[in-house]
Amino acid sequence: MISEGKKTLWNDYQKEIADDNYFYARSCIRQNFFPGAEKTFLKILKEELKKDVYDDPRHTTCTGIAYHSDVVSLETTMTVVARQFALMTERGYRNFVPSCITSFGIYTEIMELWEHHPEIEDKIRHLLFKATGREFKVPANLAHSSDIIYKYRNEIAGMSKFKLINKNTGAPLRVVEHIGCHYARMFPHKGIGGAEYPCVLSGLAETFGAEVIDYPERRACCGFGFRQYVIQANRGYSISCSKRKFESMAPYKPDLIITNCPGCPYFLDSWQYVISEMEGKTYGQKGQGIPVLTFEELSGLMMGYNPWDIGLQMHQIPVEPLLDKIGVEYQQDDKYCDAQGRTFGKPVIPEMIKIC
Amino acid sequence: MNSFGFEIQKDNTIEYDKNDLSLAAFVLKHEPSLYNCIQCGSCSGSCPASAISSYQFRKMQLLMRRGEIKNLREDVAHCLLCGKCILVCPRGVNTRNVIRQIRIALNMN
Ligand code: SF4
Ligand code: SF4
Image (cartoon, rainbow over all chains, first blue to last red; front, side, top):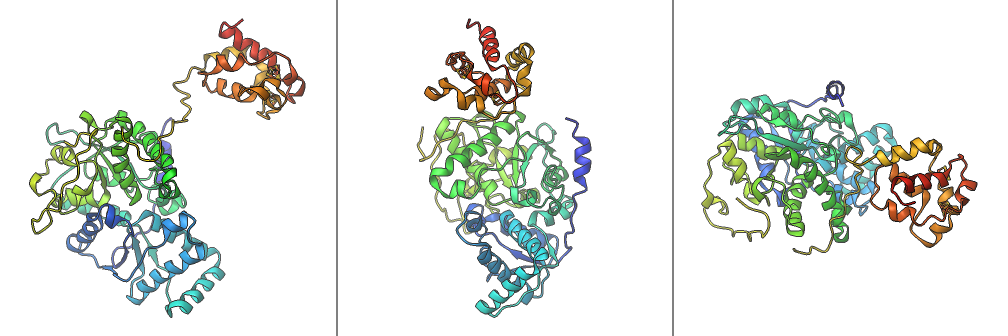
């Protein structure tokens, strides 16, 4: 296939991203999976790019996982989302920035629904007012946090201490990416590069000097799939889907997987361990796994943040081989210590997958 | 190996680039009426062999055309060559000759 024409076509998929004054909505699960990612995003925006970001402690889950698992109804989800918009409105913000791709999909879907069905919006306004006495404005701009990082990628790269270049060979690191289905699959025009040639992550990686590989299953689901994972008996569907992606990317010998969504890094990271335990199979070099980073963690790492301060010790697949390739210095002894130097316990060493 | 309470499923991806499509090409060359098949399944519905085994003409020829031929020999061995499928086929596929050509290709005659 000649992909150049297609790439040009999908290049038309661009979007408006607000310059400043963001109302940030955290993810309900990311802080458990990769607790440093959101903190790193806020640090980059506030301290490096000097942006105004409001991180409201009153906001809640968007209910996205429960909605997609058919546990809560759309009406409930819309009312919860309306409350998030009310918090934004009360604080005087109009630019809504969710940290989670599932949330981004939920907000996009609901805003689109209200645009076409104003009577549904009216009903939700009524329900929210009745329940909480709150009113809201619909955001003027909705952008996922990866959109903001993408918008300022050149500034971030300009401030960065490292590049995605192998310090020993001088060759660009080989990167594969996964944007998360709800970023552009439902509404391709809401994602940079659309659904087929998304460049929100690949563009960032290229700005850091990497070689991005368009592996065959790049557009396939990471395997999270909500009910595929939430119900234990269904987890075979989840891991099989992730396995297909690993099989597809492994021949290209990637040094790193970059991801968007809270679910994607978790599953692409943890299922590598589970597959190694179930089948003895590993996908990285020398019996190791392929390290997985979120776009915030990658940006923070490039800016020279201490890898243990941005939570990279919480990854199932150790990141040290990647750090060594980039030339990031780290203290192995500090890996499982908190900011005060107190140890918080080491994980059990896996049987099958090489950790270093 | 550890048990996690669920299984990794076998991948069902059809690898057209890697699969052997030569047998399908041979059959289609010698019985081109198979090109007319619309996958309606009437053949499988009328087949006495499919009533007593997992063999089905429609499924078998579809897999063969995709190059998924691992179980083909075992599959076509079930056919009685009774010709009921020819009678019901709305597209005039000479199904019996399709089976025959497969058996020739697999040296089963
Ligand atoms: S000829 Fe074979 S395939 Fe056709 S109906 Fe008879 S047994 Fe079934
Ligand atoms: S009856 Fe004829 S058209 Fe229908 S599936 Fe069988 S061979 Fe194909």
